[in-house]
Image (tube, rainbow over all chains, first blue to last red; front, top):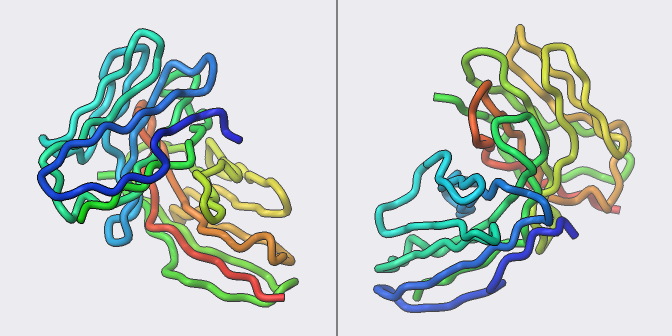
Length: 114
Length: 112
């Protein structure tokens, strides 16, 4: 158990819909990362927050947005969903940022868009 | 940009065989290098890491050496077990960067 909690574990929805994925980082971790894992693209970095502020942005679509709340949990919002958005979405956390430290990953939220 | 290339899978071996999973990287400066492992139905877990050239990371019988001259960080294990069946990801973190950049992953299956 990494200490990172993601909900829901599985989600099935239709094209055009909107979903919210939630992540609670390990106790004491200030940094949260979101990654998308798909069969053809591998693990792609989406976005990182540190103590409530956006720190780095990767290949995140404009239809996607995220935020980190004062209690440090984070949400990833995916809207106008397309079939190609079906993937496993991972959240990871770390104590700080910019260090060669370990990222702790949750078990992921599997999104299926029909 | 920064990138990681690792050997295509899937890789299937018999128990007690020797394992090598190749990983090479492209990055400016001196990145930190990592191997993560993903067991079925779970998230990624750090297996080992190396933060400077010639460092050797090791854990659970796995080893990898940071070779700057060949920009490589190959994963090795002398005698694999069925429980080592998983997907293995090589990753780098560039100097001053916030994120990890992952390779495509290599699925390893060990048969008894």
